[in-house]
Length: 217
Image 1: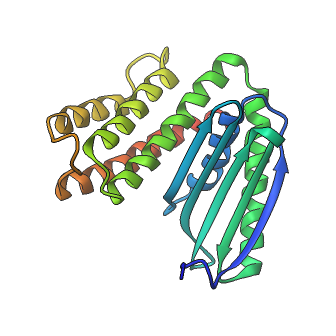
Image 2: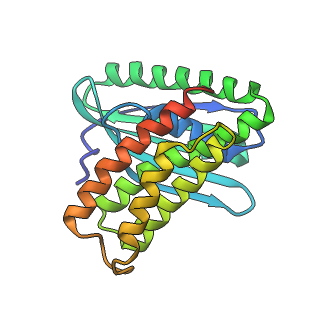
């Protein structure tokens, strides 16, 4: 029996007008996962002929364990957000709040000049990478998968902040961490002490990335 079987569930579907469904997915991901104590539980992105993105997060709503799931489907230009938890009224309030935040962010995103939009998109990708680092560590994924997320997040942050004069401190610490874990066995999970330190570090990187995102959204 799943933990969600005895929970109430509410959902909302929002249509969107954008040709960049991947960016829409990352904006709604940001709306949910930019808040404290939100842990990524699962995710998938498929980009064959049309984009489809899914993600599920564990969090607390009204002090109780809860889950929020997102699904972005390019085929019908829709964002679906589901919230599961004990208190149905609190879930509805939460969902309204998230939808309002998402709509506000997507409107700001669409109004940005192209260069800013490009930088923001990269910062949003970096944000998902830091969430995925913690996810991979908790799932005891091989070093190669964790390494990829750190390297990709670092690359996106360099591109999101280029031309700002000086290097963003985040790019230095990510470089150091890549050097630290590079020599570890690629097919094995990171050793426990290194894994827990890296998980803590990625939460710091997330905060630094949110500061960059907040310039635009």
